[in-house]
Length: 231
Image (cartoon, one colour):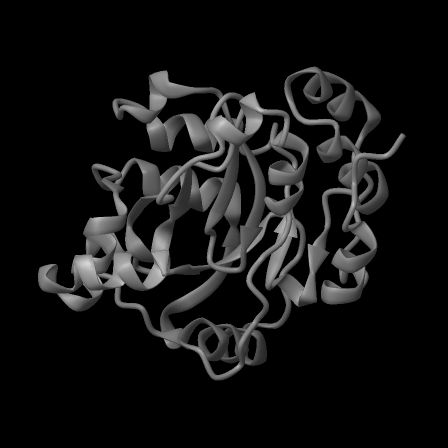
């Protein structure tokens, strides 16, 4: 019996892959015992493929295992769980799944760190809701053309062309060595290689929700934002 409830909706929302690569059976067989059943279903049907010309892609967790290990090394995340890369955006933002805690953090190069979610899925997994939570890991926030990320993606796409498998738009030079977030500074790079390089350039801070709000709006806004999200 299928555990995927929203695969049709996924295809309706994001379309067919612009670059389709079948997921090797051997990879799925190795990963399946450690992950929710819905994940192999998505890989069987959709592969490790690129969507919307590179806006995001479903990645092979084994390809990014060393990247994840490098980013979490010497942080509290290293001992917390075993994390697997699931999807990646055009700018190398890697969304992960922890075997025990589910969606707990995201590798975010444009923030030069790892962003913790407000809460993880540990309780949901323990109460049998892991399949639903895991399926949600495949879904990305729709591309909004008038947003900062939307404009940055559109500019990169027009100048550099679409992304292929395991490619990203990377800042050159990178943020830790003085790079600025500007479309003119983006280049198409190998995502695994670029993310490994970035892991060695900075301390890879783990950024909590309060830290993220403070960066954006100032410390005084933290409680206001929390209240707005909880209402």
